[in-house]
View 1 (cartoon, rainbow, N blue to C red):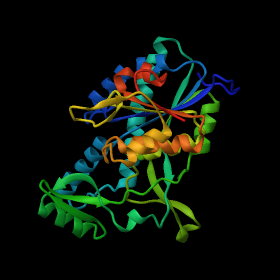
View 2 (spheres, helix red, strand yellow):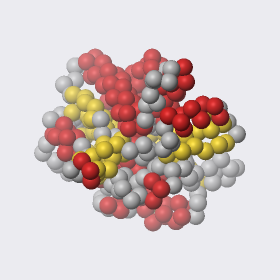
View 3 (cartoon, rainbow, N blue to C red):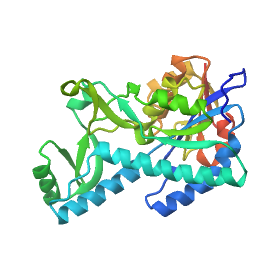
View 4 (tube, rainbow, N blue to C red):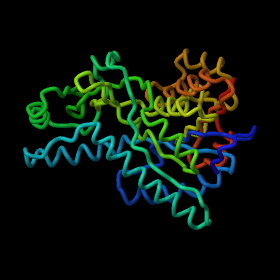
Length: 322
């Protein structure tokens, strides 16, 4: 597992678990993670340092929905805002991963450790998205529910679609992993680290509070956060595990074609031609490209969660490289 003396075979790896790894129901989520843990640990060799990150979309909606229902029944119950919901989901999803990996390591008499870092991610206070919040979060509301929330929180913004009203927030680009040094210290002490869950908690410097960080109601795209995590922690490999086995050209059409090994320049051309879904595969592709452009000796793998042992070794997946 983690070592401090890097050799030519040494790899520091960031592994991003997609939504397939998680579940709304807490008991099913822990069960699913215990299914994943054996393959994940088999895929990790003794020359790797590992950071795991994950999504939290379903879980954060679940928490917000629970607070929203409670607030509709009792006006004294506050609506939990996104920084707090993000911290809650990072904590309990990390706890489930710690439980699953810990149980599997105990079976194999492994001596590694696992720790979750509730992670803040600094964003620019003048990020353009902050002035135009357009990302939907939380449950869909009736008009009465929206009016009640708007009265309680005049700064909330909402958008209407065919399912009702939904709160909209900004989605700024991540700029810095605040806890990167803590993550590196854990890696140096034989820990598998779980960090930046759900894209992390967006924070900005508060000029009214001596430049300290304060959370803002926003959502960071988790794939961009995974790339920044890899870059800030000087990772060698970035792995995206999802519900598809490869990146595809012409995905969903009769002539769809799986992409195996591909260079940065070729993938750039496909992305610029609009080959990948804006809210599905494109964020992973753009994150992979940025990760490699920051240090050309890196690689990125995108593949199926159930093929985790192959994908982490760069097999049976899309392998992106210079």
